[in-house]
Length: 622
Image (cartoon, rainbow, N blue to C red; front, side, top):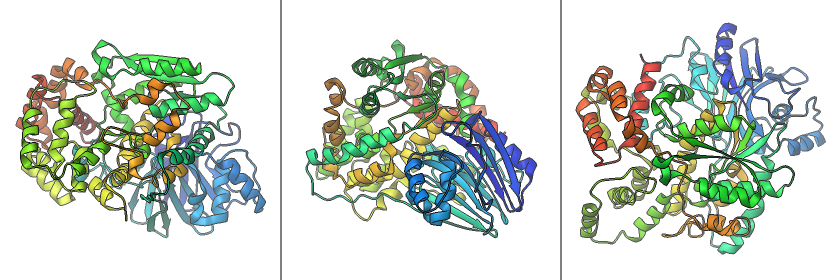
């Protein structure tokens, strides 16, 4: 687990050093900067495997290949054995050297042999060629920028922006997408000159020319060949192996435990391995956040498996942590779970260096309520318009800032239920429809958005598979959007801010491919979710955990923001502040603030996304 940076084409060693040092938080255990004719690599190391000999950049024995690598290759022992039989010899016991041998053996097809979370740059000295690649699901980030015949890359935008020729100019189209999704979707970044390499993608640079491609995809490929019990029997050994495989580590390891189905299943498998008690970590809240607190269920699991359980109670001052959080992303990131991830990672790092988390379980097994919403919308499509009109009237009224706001859920469902399936799902994943964004913009900024181009990545991904029903397409869209861009981006940045390596075994590509073959009816019903995983968990977990509904890793943001609303508005959303920035109409902002303050609507998320954006602008725009 590390931070990587690099330059090809024209290489300035001082610039490369600044790029590398910008990522010091990702790797406090070591620093390497090397360059040669037309290339330069930097590396910041968090030592997890091969503590003594794994320093980077690493060269092949004959000096013709060099790699800088962020992440872990979980199947490196199996690959070492396979490559050894083909004549490759290894000088180090870790996973980095395996990448060099894999490239020697398979060339650009090497990624299809890897099981891990990774982003790397590999320089072929003979071909004078750079290969960049990113893992299957997008656990590890990678950004790049081109200037004439030169290219810069890094684990985070801050590394790329350390190049003097990379502009910080805003991409107005990316900002427009952020206001809808609360993250900037790949391949864009918030900076016009910086791009993200998408998950499961590779890029080759040679002689100033660039070629990129997607090297892996897992589309819905369902067949009605098994019943629920059989699917559970097929999935369970793959699930177990994915979890055990990710326990390979030369440093202390633990697990996040919320008491939900995903994290509890991981802890159950870890506990079966024997040895010392599993180290588990959980967040909770005071009385104000009671509806979001999962500690009671986490304690049920911890007691059942005899874990060494740690709890931290959060009552976050959103103002004190705002600037540090935004600096951790370099881009606006509007999900308040980042605050929780940061606090939990900091707390966990006091005890272990590696932690396993349940990210990906909702996308793979059908855990999000919106999947059931898609199913319900499909089944209710023939209802008269008057039924929807009545529902609209019944859902009007004040909204409480609680974890399960059924009035808010019903209102959101009805707002999009009659749209075409792709648009419906995009509306449910997004927060601010295009018409509302248009009403928010000043005339000048609306023109900039139009010139930059508006994107709808959720609807595009939903429509991409060659087959699949509405629920299966929704899961596919999340696998290519919400999971890597929201869930994994937040957990990577906030864990790495505290030098904690976070592993996500439910994102194992074998498990992803397998679950994409399961028909949606074995995952989701109108009143059921995660059916296959629950069937597996029946033999692993206490009954209250198997049967509980989804709460999710969320914060009592609405409560926290109402408590500090006056300060937040005066410092970040006051009319003169908004007017000076020139992007939004102050009167529109004031209306949402008034509705939130009066309890008419819980606009906590929306206001938070604007505050984050303004804080980002102060750091990067001025």
